[in-house]
Amino acid sequence: MITISNGTVLFGPDLIAKNTNILIDNGRIIEISNDVVEGEIIDATDCIVCPSFLNAHTHIGDSIIKDIGDGKSIDEIVKPPNGLKHLELEKSSDKDLIDSMKETMWNMLETGTTHFIDYREGGLKGVNLLKKAAKDIPINPIILGRDDSFYDEDPNLSKVKIAIKKILKVSDGIAPSGFGEISDEVAFLIVSECKKKGKLSSIHAGEYEALQKDSLNNTGKTEIQKAVEAGFNQIVHITSPLNDDLDLISKNNKNVVLCPRSNGAFSVGIPPLMEIFKKGIKPLIGTDNIMINSPNIFRELEYTLKIMKAFYKEYIAPKDILKMATTNVCIAGSLNNNIDLDNNLNYGDNSNKEKIMAKNDFKTKINKLTIEKDNFAQLFIVKKLSKNPYLSLINRSETKDIICVMNKDKLVCYN
Ligand SMILES: [Zn+2]
Image (cartoon, rainbow, N blue to C red; front, side, top):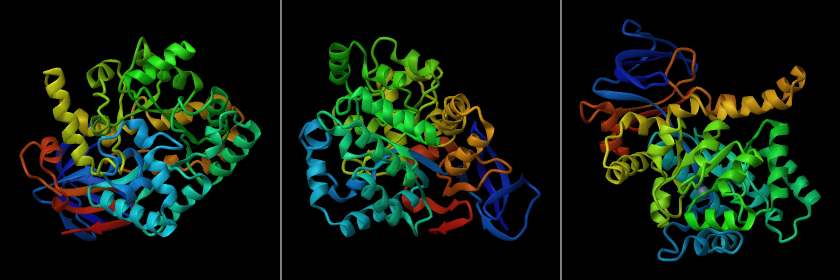
C-alpha cells in the first residue's frame, strides 16, 4: 500500500483541484480522503497530483532522425514511401532504431506520459521492434501498424487483407498515413478488419488546406468527410476542416487528435480549437513526429494555450487544454466509446463480443485515465510552482520538477 499525502489532487474527469490523500493498493486507487494514511507515504505537500498524460499521436520510429529536413516541405519530409524520413529509416539498423525509441519512451515517462498512441511504420517488423523496445519500460504504447502493400499503385486487396490480419495479431490497430496514399478499398478493408477485432483504426486527415481541396476536387469529398464515412475511429489533425467537416465529426462522435506544434513546425496552420470546442468535440493532443518535436506534453500544452489565445484574442481555460492530454479520453466522444459503440453495433452476439473485448486491451490501457476511486493509479506528482495548479503545469513544469510517475503498480521516482 502507498499513500500519496497532502497533494493538490486534480480529481475526476473535470480535474477538480482538492487537497487530499490517495491510498493505492496493487496499482489501484482504493480511497481518496483527508483521513487515510497507510503503508508507504509519499509526501506530496506543495505538489500537484495529476492524471498521467496520454500522448495521443506519435511516430516514435523517427526518433533516430531528429531535426533532419529543416526547410523542406511536409511532403518531402514525411510522405510515404519516398519522403526523406522513410528513406533515412530504411538505412537505420534495428539496434539503433530500438535504442532511439527507448530513449524517447524514457523521455516521455519523465515528462509525465504513461500512455501513447503510435503510428508505427515498417509493417509487422516495425510493430515488433517497438514492442521489444518498450518491454522493460513502465509505459504503455498503443501501437497502430501499417503495411507497404497499402501504398501500391494498384493494391492487391487479398494481399492487403492478409497483411492487416497479421499486423492486428500483434498490434492495437491500424493507421495508414492518409487518403492521398491509399485507395478507398484499402481504407474500407482497414476499418472493417479493425472492427472485427475490436481494434482501433486511425488516419491523418485535413492536415492542410491543399490536401482538403485536392480531395474535394478529385473525389467530391474532403479528407475528413472520407475518414468519417469510411468509419475510422480516430482522425488525426483536422487542422483545415472545410464545409460541414466539424459537424460530421461531432455527429458521428469521432475521436480527434490535434497536433498544434507539428502543424506549426510544418507551416500548415493552427487547428480551429474554438470551433472544435463549440461543436462539443473533446479533442486529444499529440506531439506527432519525434523528428520535428520532443514528445514533452508540457511543451505541447503551453504552445497550444498561448497560440490559441493569440489567434482568437480570447480567454481559453487552461483546464480545457490540460484535459486534452488527460481526461478527455474518458468522456464524450472518447476512443473507448467509439470502440464500444462499434462492438455493440457489429457484434450483437454476446459471447463473441466478450471474446473480442477480452482481446481488446484498450479498456485497461487507456480507459479511466482519471484520478477516482477504483481506477488504476495512473498519475504523476510534480512540484506546484504557482497557486493556479493548471497554469503551474502548463506554464512552468519542467522535467526536473517531476517527483514520481506512477503507472498502475509501477512507480518511478526522480527526486
Ligand atoms: Zn502523424
